[in-house]
Image (cartoon, rainbow, N blue to C red; front, side, top):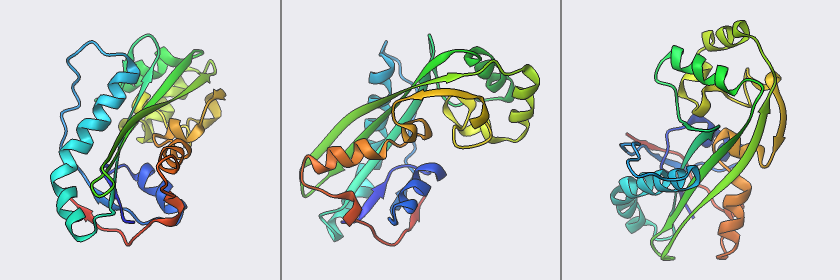
Length: 206
């Protein structure tokens, strides 16, 4: 069963590669603005579904060649009194990390699974709670200077240079990276699909 990943995220692609899977990659153009007053959980599920729907036409063409193909789309936000997506500027990244300093915040990832032959469309979310230490402004500036914060929800990578400032994690760590693989596998297992038995050569469609 080929896996089609509706995301250009190097982290999500890398996590599948670590499992020995080689997903095909679609990069849908999606307006990630959510205009309705949604909860963080609803927000990530809404955005994951939007990404899947944006990639659906290309996915259906791919599924004509292999009806068993599976589409996976995901979105992640950080929540601490307000929703935090990816920072647009270094100053916004600084403000986010200042706000998260010494706090416990929640990371929500929404996932949409879509399969044409199986007639599936499942949308769900995963939650992880993360507490940061009381790092300094200089620590934040030094981290931002690495460039790592700019394409991450909440302006940090838990698997990267910001790891030393994590005091505790309650919930799946892979969810904080942006791809709750264990939960994805559980959802697929519930409908008789084993993600460990899938995989194809990779290609990328802009």
